[in-house]
Image 1 (cartoon, rainbow, N blue to C red):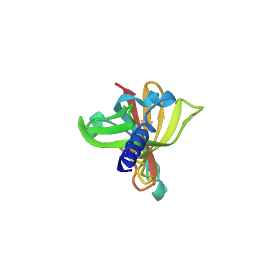
Image 2 (image 1 turned 180 degrees about the vertical axis):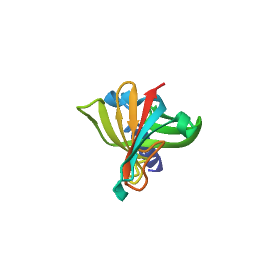
Image 3 (image 1 turned 120 degrees about the vertical axis):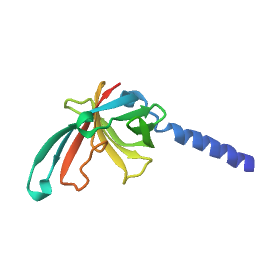
Image 4 (image 1 turned 90 degrees about the horizontal axis):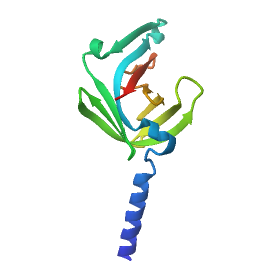
Length: 147
């Protein structure tokens, strides 16, 4: 009986590791993405509207994102790994605009730790890395290109 339980555990573990692999249309994400610039608007809560474009030169750092086929995403700052998470999609859908797909991803299946993104073959737009608007009084769109 113990052997049966152990075999069942191994099979379930193997299955759960594969269910969030980047397959089919999600393969568009696989690879390294380098941060190019960010469009940031803020000040909305104070009835103001400020806009700024930020980049590697203005911020004095580099950032990149790496999506693995196995369903992991890694975030790098100045070439150093900052965080690595399991990718769990809330949704991944085609969109009728300048991007091919948009997605909401739960990092490590945590609904409190999400990223929203839009992607084409060569461009990735992410809402929260490396720059975000923490107070909810604006937004930031961070643009990456495929390396």
